[in-house]
Length: 260
Image (cartoon, rainbow, N blue to C red; front, top):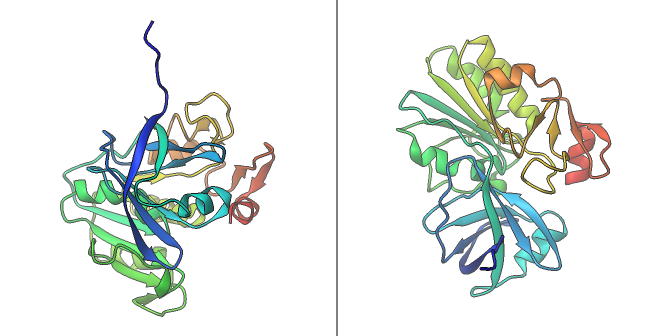
């Protein structure tokens, strides 16, 4: 009987420093994936974590230094190998309509393939400060920073609200901190615009078995990670709660403190 291999090998072709804490790992291999889907990236003897692709052909992930897994990943060099399984989950529904994409922080990496599939979308990128930016030459974006070090001083959601007072859009896509996405969703509801949000939760299996990524009655890995307005209206934990590694239900503030 032929032995089946769950994980597939990736070989690092190039590593790009995007900013002081973010790197893009380009691989030799292609991965057939839809915008918004994810892979489970495995470093043997370290851990396995979910990532969306920031490039497709060849495949790449863009990673922020945060925790032991990313520390070990940052130690890898060109020619080193790591492994993945997937892709998993449901991605974005792309339309040939007038779209606005609202992202915060590393959420930009999560929508990169989506943006490349859309026709001239309006993009709003929110970051804490100028040094946190990346992909500024790759995409045309309205930039917002909390400290005003570049672009609009304030939140991406404030910029979105001002934009929609004067401009009509057919759909809003969002990815980033969930508190931001909840505000984006509320604004979308106010203006009666369909919204799709890419959620993040702590994941173990990636295939809907362990339940660690539950958001209300939905499993982010299996039912998402991208959810529509219809889904979000029914997900009472959205923008409020997430589960910690020990299974405890916690506020988003506690969850992000643990994840930082």
